[in-house]
Image (cartoon, rainbow, N blue to C red; front, side, top):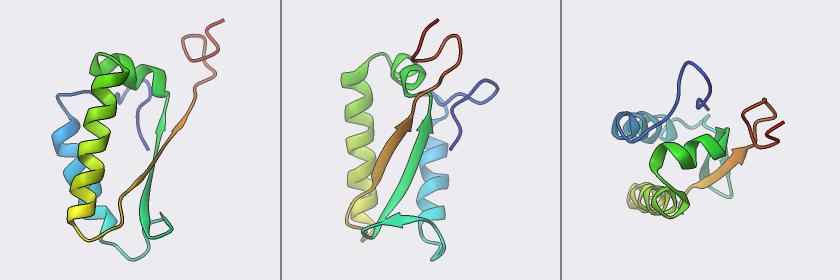
Length: 92
């Protein structure tokens, strides 16, 4: 999944990205966990900041899970892969 320098996910590009992913989920080869499409975000701390806070992002992702469920999936698995960069989660 993207969300790294050069391609950050933010509220402006979120609508187009989620539609892209929802189309990708229909592919039988898309990775799923217990029937749920899997999305992994790099640098979740930056994602939280881009959306203006954890509560806002939580709402956005829960709404996305609902949209995925409406497609007939049992939800979506959403995970984060922390950054170890200077500005990432280790913050050195």
